Amino acid sequence: MINLNGKVAIVTGGAVGIGAAISKELASNGVKVVLNYNSSSKAAEDLVAQIQANGGEAYAVQADVSVSEEATKLVNAAVEKYGRLDILVNNAGITRDSSFKKLSEENWRKVIDVNLNSSYNTISPALPHLSESDAGRIINISSVIGQTGAFGQTNYSAAKAGLIGFTKSLALELAKTNVTVNAICPGFIETSMVLEIPEEIRGQIVAKIPQKRFGHPEEIARGVLFLCKDGAYITGQQLNINGGLAM
Ligand code: NAP
Image 1 (tube, rainbow, N blue to C red):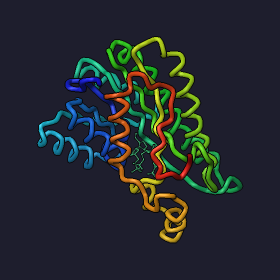
Image 2 (cartoon, protein in one colour):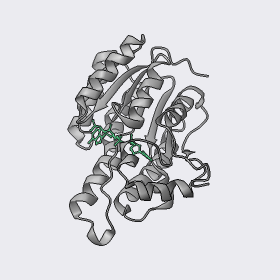
Image 3 (tube, rainbow, N blue to C red):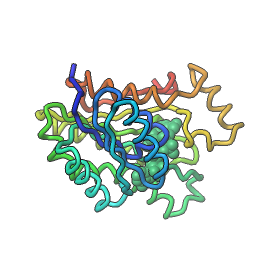
Image 4 (cartoon, rainbow, N blue to C red):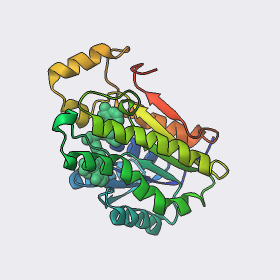
C-alpha cells in the first residue's frame, strides 16, 4: 500500500461533480491537490477553502484543458507550486448530445477535444514529472458509454472509447516504469451531467440499472483512491463502477 501523504495530484475539472469528490477524497488522504477548473471559479475557491479548513492542501488553477497550451500551463503551475507531480486524474468532460443526423461538426469536435484530446494535452507535459515519482498514477475518467455506446452520443462514446484505447496503449508503453495508467468507467452518477437529463428519461435509465439507483460521486472518488493507494500492480485496466449496468 502506497503512503499518499505529501504526494501531489492534478484533478482536471476538479471543482464540481465527480471531480470535486475526487479532490476531497485525495486531500483527505494527505495528497496536495491541484484542482483545475475551467468556468467554475467560485466552486473552486470554495472547495480549496473547505479542504484547507479540514487540514488538507489544495490549490486552484484555471485552465481549459482542451487547449494544449493551457494544459501545459496547468502542469507547470502544479510543479512550480508543489515541486513534484505523482497523480494525474483526467476527469474534465462534457456532453453535447444529439442524434448523428443532427450532430454538428462543432459539437463533434468540441466533445472529442474536451473528453479525449485533453488527456493528450495534460499527459504530454505531465509524464516527465510523473516518471520521477515512485508511484506515478494516470487515471482517465472514461464512461460506461465508451463501452456500450448510447443513442444520441456518437461524439461522447467515441471520445470515451478512445480514452480506453489510449489508456491501454500508454499502460503498455509505461509498464516497465513506476507509472500506471488506468481508466475508470462510471455508470450514471448523480451530478449535473445526469440531472440535466429529462426526468422521464432518467426514470427509464434507473429501471435498466441492476442496482436500481444512480451512483454517488464519492463512489467514483473511492475508486480513484484505491488505484492510487493499492494499484501498484494494476495497469491498463477499466474499473467499472456502474451498479451492474455493463458487465
Ligand atoms: P459535471 O458535473 O458536468 O462536471 C464536468 C467537469 O468537467 C467540470 O468540473 C468542468 O469544469 C470540467 N470541464 C469541462 N470542460 C472543461 C475544460 N475545457 N477544461 C477543464 N475542465 C473542464 O460532470 P461530472 O458528472 O462530474 O463528470 C466528470 C467526468 O465523469 C466527465 O469526464 C464525465 O464524462 C465522466 N462521467 C460522468 C458520468 C455521470 O453519470 N455523471 C458517467 C460517466 C462518466 P468547470 O465547471 O470549471 O467548467
